[in-house]
Image (cartoon, rainbow, N blue to C red):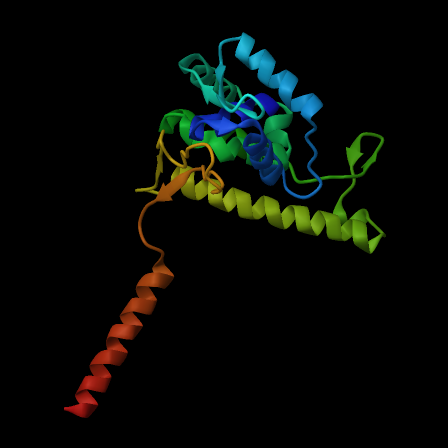
Length: 224
């Protein structure tokens, strides 16, 4: 997962090490930890593999290294995304990290990853088991454990609804923009990546516009 985060953010544009670390922590959310002892060995490993380069800049007293993804690194990023499986599909936080960079793939490859996630979501959430059998919400006496299942079930339904919209609705497309969110080192903006969904307008929006039009016509008629 760390390789995906590093290569994904560098695909947005070159970054200094501290900026890269900040973006990874922001993506992970509260409680996320990433020590220099984890990040910099990973950067050295990816550099040795030819997936990124480091260029020194600045004065002799304060050298800043700019990290840049290579074409091999971009190919590796695409491979990681295409091969999303196991815990990266089953864990919602890990899959959200995949979504953050999924737009780097061609549309049909994006959809294949989303289809695999949809298959995972067909199994209702469970946190407690009896001899390997998931305990149903009705079997839980603890109201807070019931609440855990309620919250997880609501999130699951919302995600299934979104996935169906992307995968099934006529006119819906998943656009891959290889330059989306790219920045230059030294900027303070957080990279924005993800899946762009477009399609027909929502029925409620059409109803609202129609109602506004009728009200405007009625007002004009009264004032005539």
